[in-house]
Amino acid sequence: MRTNHGQLGGGFAGAAAVLLLHTVGTRSGAGRVHPVMYLADHDRYLLFASKAGSDRNPDPYYNLLAYPEVRIEVGDDVVAVRAVELSGAERDAAFTEQARRHPGFAGYQRKTHRVISAVTLIPTGGEGGPAPADRTEGTSS
Image (cartoon, rainbow, N blue to C red; front, top):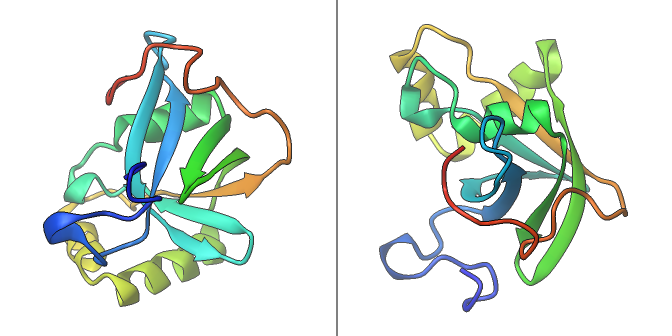
């Protein structure tokens, strides 16, 4: 993704908007980098904790709740953001739009007993979480 300025290649080219989410593992304290789909919403980035319809939220969701000040890579930009969980009508409207654009998300919701959580990433203009080189990077917490 970095080589292609934030664009996915191969069979995934043009499939969805994806960013790199830098979090801190809740158990390990180590830096993590997760490629995740997002929905652009004005100056915010909306994420959905679908985990392909699993009955458990994905690890990055828990990392964001524990350490909400993080960084994301969108295209060639590194942006400091603050994660805020969406709820109620705002969550429902965001998820409906994501499912409209990417119908697989509606299928994920049907597969699970939980309501798929939604998180907005709001740019802060600050430093935001560990720099990519500050911690060991991986893909799980």
